[in-house]
Image (cartoon, rainbow, N blue to C red; front, side, top):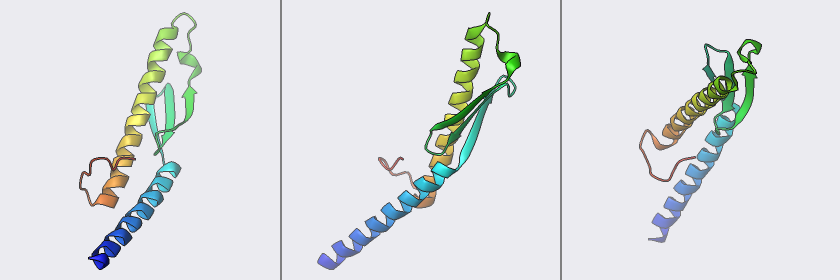
Length: 105
């Protein structure tokens, strides 16, 4: 019985190490979201952290701030959605494609 527990513990430790490796890799990878035909671009990493926001001067209109706000929101949401997809792909490497509740990053 102790031998089985030892084996299981080693498997869990190996899985934790692999998860840490994947998380580190995701932190280095970048995805982009854009809106307004590329007039607003947002770059995020695989940890869903926004790294940069680029706004084309042509889309900045002091009379229509709401449009710019909407474009920024749309670009951020798209970048974060792309980061979530990349994160899910990374996790599927670890789990062999199995969906394991609570194993999100």
